[in-house]
Image (cartoon, rainbow, N blue to C red):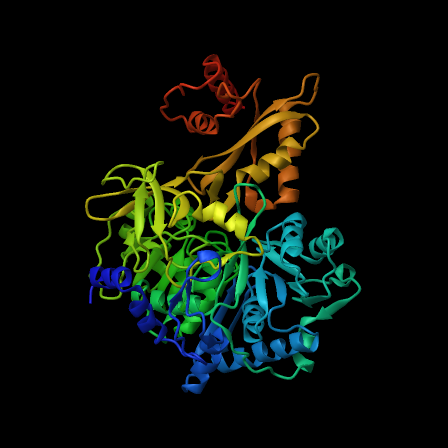
Length: 629
């Protein structure tokens, strides 16, 4: 069966198609209700089914005789540590940590925040929560206390699981002062703070009253069995940037997600059980959830946890060393990582040091991959580099290629074709479907396939307004796209104020709120500009208040510091340019797209609604001055 057959069946016979795919995983109770209307008319999958995803990831493989197979490989160039856990060893720690959570009073339906680095204990914590029906929210370890507070206040966790520190290249990042500050600022008290002490340095002064030691909790607890949950029971919350600045708590189900991930590992990534699969993503992002933890483990693949950077630990050959050392068959990373390697090793000399004979495919996502990077990869690595596209909301690929039968055809700069289950259309602003080669809005006809978001945590109105209100009966992706005559789709970028920095979705409106809070700033605009390495980076243009004596250099330093403190270094805001005024429409709307185009040095048309064309020359002159500094 080829991709076209699979796709057509998934659209024309949805319920039967996904019932068959659900049969590929083990259920405590196999669903009879395959597709229902769900709450508020939003379709749901497998509503009456019951299962436990930790059992699918760990226990079933032990029951099937694969307890001695490596489940998790940990490689940390920044600490010099390596370790491997078999499925049996992983179960021992996960089940006892789950028992520890029960002993603290946590139960099915409670929430827990996980604020940890790229270490095995993060994966264990996620699966321990899933084992007993506790809904986890993993927060990227690079986020500042304010971002942690937003998530705590929204999901109201009974426990926060963290570690003493993360490592950024060679620098230790203490987590506990950040956690302590967040707890102080949060509206509600978090009952239990569980801390994994990494013992990287003497850190007793960082500990505070009321902490539960992770290792003590595991050692003293009895192992807990898997708790069957409803298919629609939330497995996790994952917050993603929204146009209002306040992150949206994307809610993921259990049964539909497990079904979709099993399908994707086989058909999209073409990975056989028992092989080693590596998604080089932080646990705090959607890729880390779907393809560092749940997808590969459900499929009985060995998953790699990498703590380091692609070019600095110790050199730009690190990725190839890991692929060689652990016999990785398929890898997934962001184009930013490959661009960084290309920059450091343009002639591919470091690649030649390693045996990559078992390496079959490289998947790229998170941002569009440029053709020159694809060319470099093909020349020096010699395996297919396959760009594909999806969102935190979908949980698994929406556009891509079905590589299971090796008959796929790559079209460079394209994100592939619609994946089975995703009935994708390109609409104009009035909701009419566009012909090939016309840019419009990428939308998906409901129902979305299994694994897509259940909604936004405790906020159906925002869910409806963000995704379902633009075109009746369709999910609005927020991305622009073009489809060609062969059905390949080319993503042209966000149509809202969310930008993509090295695969991380960040809200420019959230940054604007921080920038505008500076006492010398009258108004501002933050836009995403092109960056050779990261794809996009934020750039702030500001108008200072009359009478302000602050220098541009001092203002830039202040704002960079403020954004770093409020969001974290991941925001990557380093450019702040003062201007006399911002370009606006006659009705007073800031022309952000024009600002972005001017900063990128691209051709532009003067908007017919601009209130004063002279401002364009003013900004162009200022850009030249700013860049000549």
